[in-house]
Image 1 (tube, rainbow, N blue to C red):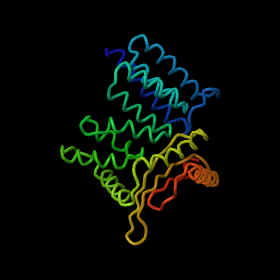
Image 2: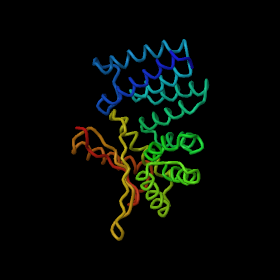
Image 3: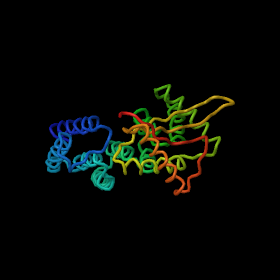
Image 4: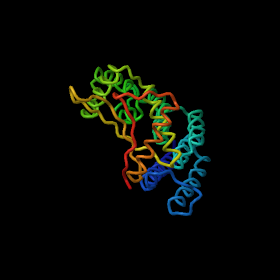
Length: 256
């Protein structure tokens, strides 16, 4: 990619990231009249101009841009188009992150498996995203590979992932099982127009409780968060997910 297109694409990525930070932890509604929706439309116009120069990058940016509105289908179509023109680490990394931002945890796990390995050269960069996607066993496997390769890492994060893996493995809980439960929570978040903010927690109190909890912060009152947890329990039951003490997903009121 030539210098000028690269500078333009980097600037657009920064603007997309900034817009995500200021959109109040919710997906942007393009139909509303606001400064955020206006900036979102302006970015879309500039991405459109980029198609004449580098369609692969333009499609990648389109995926991230559409992800701001919670448009999963549009996001997927854009990243697939980008990968068809140049399947590289950049579009796969952003694809992983946007699947996670859209609450599509199973899909994020699938993509993480192709970008999170130490052999890609981006192990440390993607480790936390893999953990947030619920790819705990996969991340633990990559940690072992990184250990063999003497790769530097976030010691606290690695210790937490390995502890979570040990607990869930002992309980027979797979990454797939974790993702299924997170996917149910993701569907509820999209229904409420809320972008996932994932905080995995590992509790290890010998003789008392040992387990892994995925807390999803939601910008609502405590009462509304309680109602969302009731909705979550009902949807989990409908999906045939059996509750277990070793792993749980909860909504917690925050940002309100």
